[in-house]
Amino acid sequence: MKPETKFYAKIKKNITSISWIRLENLSVPGTPDLLGYNNSGVFFTVELKYTKTNKITFSPHQIGFHVKHPHNTFILVEDASLNVPKLYEGSWIRNLVSGGLKHEPMHQGYSNIKKFLDKLGA
Image (cartoon, rainbow, N blue to C red; front, side, top):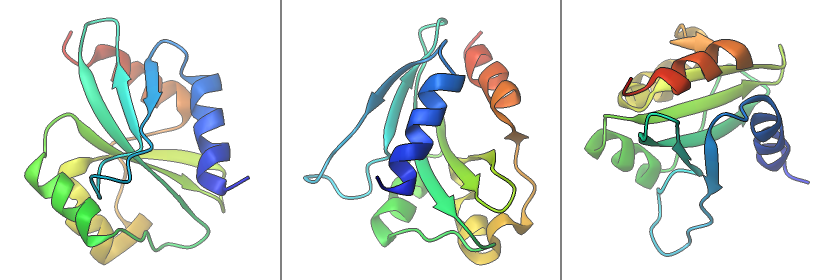
């Protein structure tokens, strides 16, 4: 099983208040991995990334998506060295490309990320 698939399983287990849809989209490159819907009726997207280093790799299409859609788009990175998920705004993608995990996440840890996503649009 791929690391991102295992990561998704952890997200579903730890953030159950969000309705998650895994997007397996080969026809539109750059489309984020997850579509989320919270109890406030807010849709948002999440790009999943798994890294064992400070570096986070994105395709040009993924970068383009987040530049074009900077609101309610997020990047969720599993830092394998700490086994901690870190959430970043999609609009930060260029910073993540250049600096990786050097940048402070907006939220980290499943409980903090869950609280944030639950409150989107409230």
